[in-house]
Image (cartoon, rainbow, N blue to C red):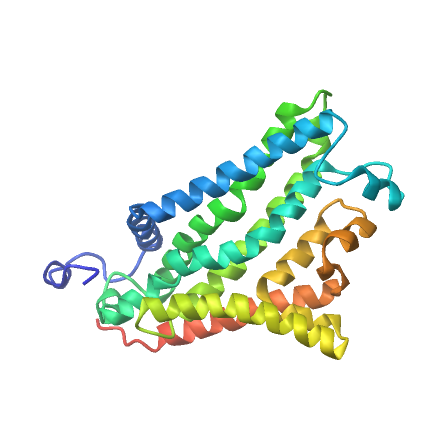
Length: 299
């Protein structure tokens, strides 16, 4: 049982919830998930590996090389490439699957565990309300996903500033850095909403985790094959994180020719990407709110 029923029934505090209720839920969930060794390893690995790769890439660029072959740059007629934008672009290519995998570990069980323990009526008696419960759970999931999708981008920016041999690199790369953080924030909101929406549909955390992985993997493959078979690039927006990748391409300071060379998602219309993100987020949050609101509040 997630809470102590006996002590909860003796509650004699305020009958109305406060903003600190959501904060208490979020911090409790964060502490509980951080006890898992696998969570700590994933967060540490996804912070260290991009930093090491960034160091190697910036060192190679100082030697006249880099993650993009010079022949490719010359063939496309590019005078120069934005190294930080390229690294964030490459990071987006691998972050989608791991974001869904990590969400299956930290977000999918959040509501399913409470439903399985029949703890929601107790939570919603007092002093916790529906909104505080949803906000607290969402904040805890968003915290972990931000460690996976935003923190590495901050580290790569600091690495470039440290490796730069010219003054003003921090300010010159600030637009690219802010664009990369915005891309990561969009991914955090999208994956958090999908994870909690799926978690509210079942009482078994394992089913919620598998469903979330299925949404990421199956929809990615299905959208690609449908777009290829029907000749409609807009259908690529059926994949949730593909939409985030396409938005990141638009925000990054990367030449369009290089985007097309590195990723086939560049053919997706940007309007379709924004529409896909909006629909997936709204649908997931709608399912979450409806499922949670159905629980009767005992006063």
